[in-house]
Amino acid sequence: MINKLLFMNGYEVYVLSAFGFTLLSFSALYLITKIQFIKEQNKFVAKFGSLNSEKAKSAKSQRINKEILANATNN
Amino acid sequence: MFKLFHPNRVFQITSKAPKYVLILFVIVLSVGLTEALILSPEDYKQSDAVRIMYVHVPAAWIALGIFSSITFLSISGFIFKNKNFFLIAKSLAPSGFVFNIIALVTGAIWGKPTWGTWWAWDARITSMLILALFYALYLISWRIYESEEKVFKITTFITILGIVNIPIIKYSVDWWNTLHQPASINILSKSSIHSSMLFPLLIMTAAFALFSLLIFLMKYNTELIKIKNKGLDRL
Image (cartoon, rainbow over all chains, first blue to last red):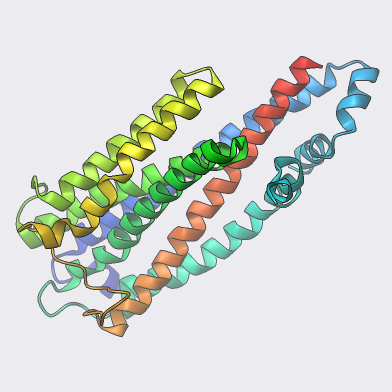
């Protein structure tokens, strides 16, 4: 099985570099998207923490805000 | 009906879905890679070089599909004055762009052993490059314009211009004499590809579709949190 992966009738360099480039692009896009997501989530938590109790209560009345905070603590 | 898809309602689902989609993607990709690299047969003419098809073709299909979806969503957003359509379109674009780049690069790698060249200004390849430029323009517009109204107008205009290129990409191999081979898979008529190659191709397409769904969900959630961040500033 390993031989079949490594020796592809002389085409292994082309085949493996095409698959390698694809997987590398996937990893890069996933990491960039994940970092952007965590950054925004942290920003939200920091902003929420700086709100006074009245504003925090009003913000917490929205379900989506509660969800964001819950997800941030789970992560 | 649009109220059902309101961000406040869908976030509950979209915030939990990525981890399940990621698990499913890893499983389907593992099966796809085993099929594509080990179990599928080599081609009688191209030998093992044909395996590049299992990443090149799904990437191209998904890049075309995502651009068509972005255009549809942008136009719908304009007609129904619904901001959420633009948000969905914006979240789809990064994976569409990456798939377009993958299709171009793997196509160049496939071109070397089969045509003897990395690149040719062939109708199919050139029109795919033009699509990548439209993707780039679309993504840059979201970055440079601050005003929502302006960015909605400009991105919709870009997608309307870009959608003209989609049938050109599809039929370029039939309209002109190109190095690129004609389509082997037809929905309306009999496909010329053998089932032993079609099966891994479909599994890899499913894996790529799951990956674009994963990136879309993560990006969409990021955009929603960005909006909520702005909302906290206004409190």
